[in-house]
Length: 156
Ligand SMILES: [Cu+2]
Image (cartoon, rainbow, N blue to C red; front, side, top):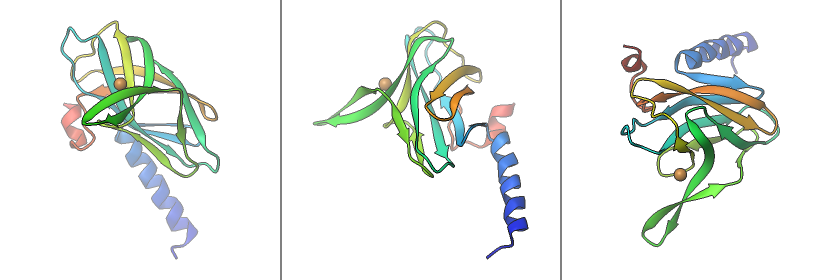
């Protein structure tokens, strides 16, 4: 068992690493790497992905989201209907206590409906998340920033 001081130092190091890797914090929640694929200029909808980690001892709930680039933002999931993958809107998304929710291609995602402007590759656009417990968390969605790509790639 590592001494407490070592654990704390490790936690601080991890914390600063997370900041440089594009993440946000609010209440007991960490929002990891919000990203979106680049879209054609004529696109009317977009999709944003991120990871929500709940460090707390109570569940939290993503209630809604909004962005200045879209008329509205919906919480969506994919369901399998025969051989088809269909999108379905969710009223809310529960983040379990001590757990996480990953919004990623093929699963849960945030759907940007009625795009007012199409963010270009390499840009970031604001997204506001409303949680039941943690309240409002503002993040920036990086366009064309797949989580598996090396970070320095995006800072050129
Ligand atoms: Cu969708």
